[in-house]
Length: 375
Image (cartoon, rainbow, N blue to C red; front, side, top):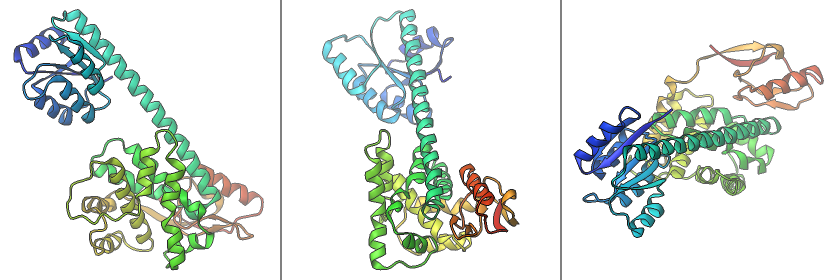
């Protein structure tokens, strides 16, 4: 468990006192002054607890903890001060959202008890957050798998988009990768409103008519509207709403707004997925570079490294009984009476595999099937 505590004070002797009294019980780190404290939060985190003095030159404890909250929102914040007036207390609670407000002099045992309570609060917050994220992620994954069964044309690319977006997030050193993966799994949700013929042309790289393009351009907004009122999906809905937006800027700085960053990652991943069908990876990237500044340059550079992590596969001709999860269809898979079960490029999930076997036992599936099998 993370028991790292960051102590921030402008007086070195106070920090030395913390070390003498507390270092045996905690993984203690010290920062002299608020600027050094903010730097530690950015570069040495995560910390479970940060405890700050109030009276520091340049930035008082209230302002410091307010900044700390923006940098490390999960870290529990505490204040220790010799100025125990109500105004300071209320400001610290409201602006820094602190967990404990302690007054000097504070006995080592009392400080240790407060830190223990802060560590326990951090543990509980982390457990709750992880449970919510896992539950939400699992629910969306099940929904995505169901959608791939009922509408394989629209949702056959979901696993690929998720793979690309996760790669981008890791290459760009992003935290909270699950948010970007959720957006990838849900980014095609609005496609359920598109006519089947339009979807078929879209995902086979055929040109769309102006009327079809107008309908297609609306699908991100439709998905965002469906998701925006679901708890914890508001940022995800914003990512999806902007997934077709061009970057059109020259700078290479990543946007601070995670929703804008996520939408630009989706923009790159979706276009790459469409362009890479039937083309070498380098050819798809070259086409995207030739389009000018419509993609964020750093995200496009990160996408270009995908060839180093793409799974190596070989094409095999198989019976349904030989098909397994994580294989990828190399052609459309249909029943003997023409019902589409899988589109070309769709990954086999457990529900998809069960559906294939079920139709094989009843109406029959056209065999053999060309599948790309992971090596």
